[in-house]
Length: 316
Image 1 (cartoon, rainbow, N blue to C red):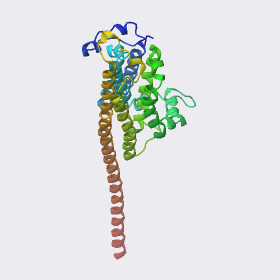
Image 2 (image 1 turned 90 degrees about the horizontal axis):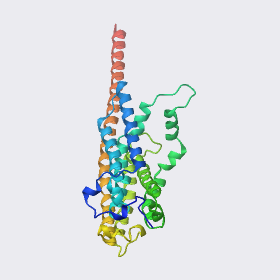
Image 3 (image 1 turned 30 degrees about the vertical axis):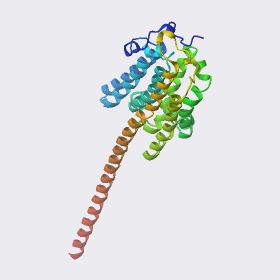
């Protein structure tokens, strides 16, 4: 069976970084990335024209997140990822663990809520529908750790170690659907932990760290399982094209190493971002407390002055 869905994928020459980065766009992801960048740019421009500011850091983070998806899906990496387990694993890890973090730090939902016009009284426009979705029971379920953590784990074990993976890799549509799934799983897993956008499930910072570390050991074990295996475990990659000049088991070991290493990188990134968010939150809380204390102090001073004035009047 032709697992490529990419025509001449089986005749690929040996992988090099130069060949991997050559332009080879998947139509679905090309359109999706351009649309995602275009809508975000529209939102930023709309805010600026209104005289409102929008963080340059958020914009840069979002753009890098979308471009990282484009790099994985619109270059030769996507062609090699159909027949090389190691390259496929790079695609999977970036799209499920790096791209979502960068996109979420870009706060696209907050931008949409600020940029979209408010519908007239009694009417529902895109902004109102987005708010309804954010506050829906569906969103409460899909962003709850009891749902996100098992989903995150199942996306590795239930997919790669069952026939589901091979059937999806058998067609272009199946492959695209799998990559969309990886991205969606990454977004719902990291959103409650690191997202700056409003969401239904937003635990305290300590709880967010626990959620992050609850999923990562399973990720590392998955990588180790691939590295330690004595035979190829995924049918799709068992017989790589002779033109690639690779050994299926060695390539699987590389894939395992990539999965294992990638469980560390996002953890560090998320942890740093969380600590910054926590610090910023504490600073804002301290300022609010100071302002409240100043107001209370002013009231006490006014009361004391009134008391002195009353004493003075009494003495006269």
